[in-house]
Length: 230
Image 1 (cartoon, rainbow, N blue to C red):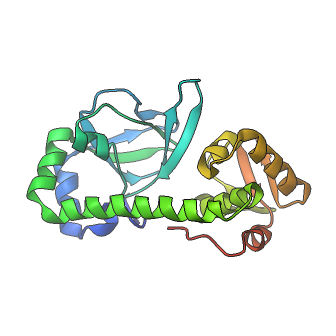
Image 2: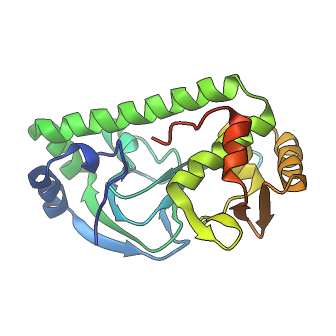
């Protein structure tokens, strides 16, 4: 199974024929849930394009923390920037569920960028989409207090990973408060206080890194408008 593609991903910007060229150039691989696809600091010798399933992109800090950077899904390339620049991996990528990918050697990937203008342009558009996403998030969070930043972050994740539950919408990914803190640029203590406020009001509940949003409508009202779930 493959597709539908994440909006803004490289495959989202490619016609079927060009997607087939990328897939034919690579080797299909499957990773199990919680398996590491790429490890921060390792040499760069390949690129993955996700065909189905979601992964977690994170960085390890000098003090041993694991900070969430992003979630990536079907159609996204991961490890691409390190491949283009020829540097070691700057982040780790771990499967959130069973994941299928097309694996291309670095040389193959760079050659496609040189010889296939549509693929090169799709890569530029993917990078642009990520920069726009980052800019929108920063602009949104700059105008909100921490509780509202947390609410906006949860609403974005509901769009991507929410599944109906008996008492609301549950995120099918594991999400710690530290993950949220790294996403909203706030301290872990401030995010913990925000979660306490949302729990006390019956808006959000959490257990073992599983978050359930009981009142997404209240979250939207709290933020003031629904964030762009690009």
